[in-house]
Length: 218
Image (cartoon, rainbow, N blue to C red; front, side):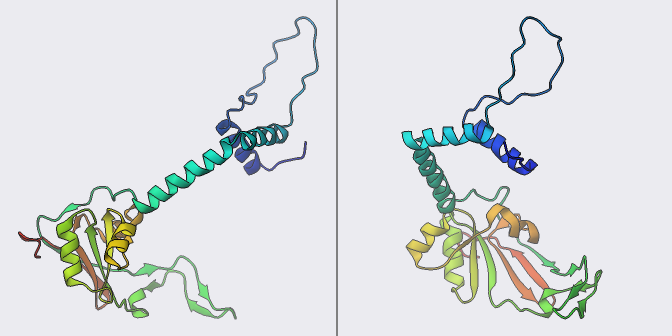
C-alpha cells in the first residue's frame, strides 16, 4: 500500500465513515498469546473505499446522494439562513464607522519598493469613494422592502437582505439584490436593527438605523 500524507488519510477516514465502513483499529494492547496465532491480513483501505464507491455507483446510490446534495445547495442559494439577532428598528440610531486598518506587514510593489510599512494606518476611503449607499432590510418584511425600493434606485444603493430570498426578489422586481451572508456586513458595521443605511461621510462611514412610521414611511 502506497504511503499517504496525513491529510489524505483524514479524508479517506472521513469518507469511510460516511460510507458506513467498519471502524479502523484503535489503540493496540498486548494480551499475550492464547491458542493458535494466525497472521493478520489488513485489506487495502483505498481498494475497500473504491469497491464501495463502485457498488454505490452501480446501484444508483451515488447518483441519489449527488442529487440530494445539489437540492440542498440550491435551497441554500434561494433561501439563505436569516442573519441571527437582527430585528426591526424601534428607535433611530446614528453612528460613524471608521474603515481604517493597520497593516500587519510591509506592502511592496513588484520591484520590491515599499508602498506601505507594517504598522501604518490605512483608510480605504482615501483611495476609493463608494458610489452607492448600502441599505439593509428584512426581505420578508413588505414594509421594509417597499420603503427601500421607493427611496433608492439601483444606481443609488445596493439593497442587502438579512432575510428572505434575493433570487426570488430579483426575479419578481427585475433588480439586483444582495444577501448579508453569515451577517458579515451587519456585524462589521454594528447593525442590530433594520432598515439600516450605510453611506460615506468624509473619512468615515455614517450608519443609521431607521424607524418606519405607520404605513411604511421613514
